[in-house]
Image 1 (cartoon, rainbow, N blue to C red):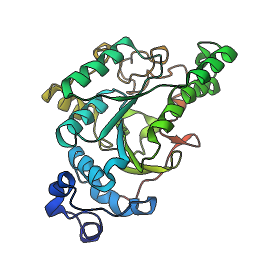
Image 2: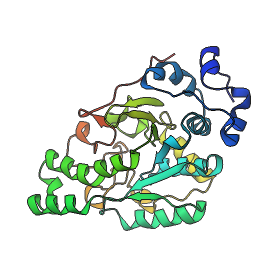
Image 3: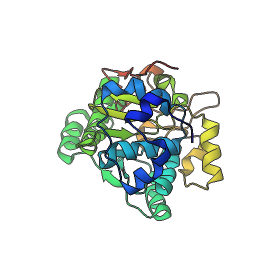
Length: 277
């Protein structure tokens, strides 16, 4: 493990007792707020994904949860959590329009790691009203209608899943797309008013896949067919050679608009990076 600088160590982590504090619940950590991000982020950037997850458990206890989209990076984090922090909540969003392979992966992952995802679904009344007014495939007609659908099927369920939390963990990576190149290990999520932790923020595609293969982690078979980022079946296609990881998501839109809103504030990725040191 890497050492911490004195200012962070004195306030947040007694690193010599790091693991015993986490699993033994020996120490009550101080509340971490948005203002603390610039102080903590430089240290977290030096740590492995496992160490970052352990820090999250130690710092937030049952007020942190991992949001999995069942993507390959999320499967990496699920594996690490199952081994190192099995008490952590893991939830996923079922939009109602996922690929059959994604549903199969949910079951396969639960069987492998012996846990149950907390599955959040969209409100049926909201979906019915949206479809009656705009049609079943409204998202193809305009970016605004596509974002409406994402709002009903993903963002609103996410808000329910995050209720009562102080922080959430995601598989966000800089290498995923042009809309995520400013992602950092620790951010303030202004849209949901809580801290966001991205343990794989700097991981390359190759590093992620090397980890998956070396640990025999289950993943969506659609990845083998060119589906590099997998969402709803109606809004995802295979990626062509040379395209970025998320080019197959909402492919009919320009690249700068290809986000559902889960990681946005006012239409942009939340710019909460602390100064790089």
